[in-house]
Length: 495
Image (cartoon, rainbow, N blue to C red; front, top):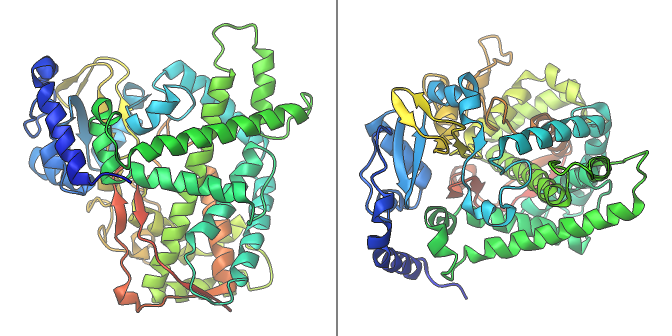
């Protein structure tokens, strides 16, 4: 049984006091860092950020200190950057200065700076990203072959939803199984039946670990990892889940090794194994088993959770706004009809639906604080001196809801992406998965999956909620590293 959050906070405070005298030298490293709330020794700005919603707390501080300010997560100074112009400067205009991955202790505990997504080692990241992009494109990412796979999975999903026979169901698990199978196929070369116990376990482990990382438990661990790793609490389940997921990947890699045809690799893991053999005599090669297992899990985890959470939130928002759903249904019937599978090129003829998908991604604000970055060298940024290795939070939430960029920043409204003639309107502040050189590896895949999984659901079903739309709560259940919708039930009514 997990101890209460109150007990955990008391333990953290007690241990913090014990090491106060030893740790004081780590504080007041402000120098010429941007201003911010005054930290306490060891605790840093914990008291100012512990009210429950760390994202809103950080955004509130930006109102006082400006677009660039400093907070201390425990003894670790972090530069918080908010607003479209400032975040774009970090991601794009000066992207090379902020190219290293920042600290994410919840993931770093197991990844240990290996793999493509969470390494701060620039050359490692470059080698693995170059290989991964090339390999995933070779196997069809963003192309017709991958779309065919997604379409087939979408039909499997529709079939499963029909089996619910209009009963009240929680859609998350159905959606997660479908998105998991798409990534399974690309990474390992196979899919699982929806009733497969291993599939259910994998999606459950990913969702549970991601939810805890985004919760108050996860936030506290991010601030005090060296203390919290010894304290019981819900955060300990993160490491249990990640350990099981790494073992699953290791087992899957071993299975691929047994069937590998070096002259005809069939998936990402196969291609990595071939690359490993080619570079086995290079002592500096980044293509070894540790990077294979970690990169595979990181791509897999991000691909499943990003898309499944977005789709799960999509259905909730369409239940909340039936007038928007009605217009999407009308456009689907006009452009696609009800007899053929949707294709990604249909999106060009469906400006309202396209605007709705954009607006869903903007409004749900999936990764509100962005994935942290680090400075790659000593730099001067907006008049402040940032040493090499300084952590930076590019607040994506502040970009996606920047009132200078969106007409309706704080409400769900597809007009944010429609011009006066009803056509899709491009907006440079639309960066739900970051921007620049270190943008999400599977961005093209995300766009294709969102359309090719969501539209078949809406093509085949009307959506019904057991409660009136006005009573549906669309605020996230947790908001830290990511925003996750509250659990809900719905009915899929065949059209």
